[in-house]
Image (cartoon, rainbow, N blue to C red; front, side):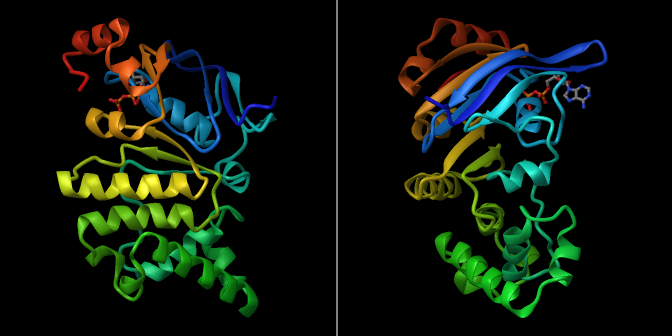
Length: 255
Ligand SMILES: Nc1ncnc2c1ncn2[C@@H]1O[C@H](COP(=O)(O)OP(=O)(O)OP(=O)(O)O)[C@@H](O)[C@H]1O
C-alpha cells in the first residue's frame, strides 16, 4: 500500500554539523502527528526539508509515493503540503480578507503579487469565495474588513491557519503554533486543529507545549540529536524511558 507522507532516511548537514541524521517516519492520512524533541534536536530542520525550504543532503520525502523533497516551496505547496511559520507572516497593513486571498494563491505561483495582479474577474470571484470560506471555518468572517495587524494575538494566529487553509492543503505543517499563547488561546487553537482533522486535513506539528501535544496528537515521533528516538501514541511516549531520558538530559520535562 502506498503510504501517505513518508520521511525516508532524511539527512541535513550544515558544514560539519549533522542537524538531521537518517530520520525516517510515516505520517498517516487524517492524523495529527506530533514531532517533539529537546532543543536543537532537528525538528525545525526536518520541517524545512518537508516543506521545500531546504533541500536535504540525502534521503527523500514522499507524498503518496511521489518524491517531493528537493522541490521548491511553492511546488511542494501545489502538491498540497503547506506550512505555517513560527512567527506571524501576515501582512499587517492588509485586511483579513486580503491576507486570506493571498493564501488562495499561495500554491499556484512563486510570486503571489504577480499572481493577484494577473487575476481576471472569474479568478478573483473564485478566490474570494474560497478566502471567505476559510475565514468562516476559523470564525473570522466578521473581521474580514479589519487590518490584520490590528487583530488580537489569538485572532492573528487563527488567521495564519486560515491563510494556509485557503490554499486547499492536504497536509498542514505547523511550527510551534502555541508559542506565546495563554491557556484559553491554546484551547481555542487546539479546537481549530481538531476541526481541521475532521475536515480530512493531515497535520504535522512541531511543538514544545507537551500538554497540547499529548492532548491533540494521534501519533508522536520523538527525535534527539537529529535521530529518531521513539514513536507511539501519547501514553506510550509520555512513559517511554528513552524520551524521558532525552528530556531530562536537556533539562525539560515531559508533561
Ligand atoms: N541554517 C543553519 N545553519 C547551521 N546550523 C543550523 C541551521 N539550522 C539549524 N542548525 C543547527 O542544527 C541543529 C538542529 O536545529 P533545529 O532548529 O532543527 O532544532 P529544533 O529541534 O527545531 O530546536 P528548537 O526546539 O530549539 O527549535 C542545531 O544544532 C542548530 O544549531
